Length: 431
Image (tube, helix red, strand yellow):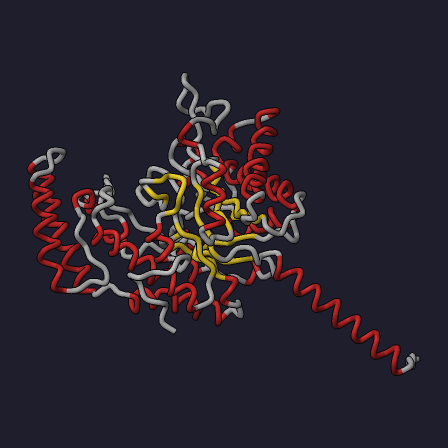
């Protein structure tokens, strides 16, 4: 039997239904709306204190001391500088190792840290970010296969955390279950990572249906790894897809000490310019070779090896002609991947990008090289409507963006590169 309704009543019902559907869509979209321009915050809850008697055990409390401090003034500066969220990294090791009352206290420490940033109107993306400090909890130990006892414990930790975050009923809080998975460099491990990421997603979603989640691909979370991910199991309105970008590593990691044989010269590399102009190659090579030859930390054998590796790498960098257009090709690959799968561009998060900074604040040319690269990467993201988060606020990794002369202030040139401050040195993003 057909039910005939008065025209006005039918029109009213249609209007109510339309408004309800619109509100539902808005609610779903708004849950992830806070996360547009972010910055990694690595100090408060990472690289935990170790036991003074056993280096395989974490100390208590695990996150105290000067190295874990971030002042309220600096948090306020983050918001004042134009960022709208922080990507708060969390060392999963203590959360996996500790039990009982101390494990409960860890959850309380996390919630307290979140509330500090939320009090300054900053969204908080909680990112479990494993490190190699305790070998039992290094990434290579955790992310071997979905069925291992350690990974199952990790799943339980993610589920428990998702439940705690969901209980805040705060759309400005999100969860990224893993950072840079060390898998996916071959077909077999790529398939294993797909299974592990799906398991992490299900564990979090079972406890937190509306919580914004961030999913990452394999290969260290690179754009190549994301392009290998099958996104169909993760399709809901509150899921973002992340990739990291540090290419070319030779440029972004100048001056970093590395133990890898092919990177032995990196700590003596300072003079790469960006964009890469062939006219600058000879100067960069001469300066690097001179620094290697004078390096007191290297044996003569290592010097010969470093000089040969440096010559090849520097030549390749300049011949490849790194510039904004070349960076854009990687971002176009993600745009194409998203389009194939019907994923809106604003569901993509450039979760990390950054470059080392010259120790001498007076080295303006090196600072401008870094700023130009940051500018082009940020522009590549914004032109494609991706969200982004720079690495990192402060810390010892060489990429901190706090001002060396005023540690409670964000470096002005970095803000210019990120479009958060008018710049006399850098152009507007191309349209």
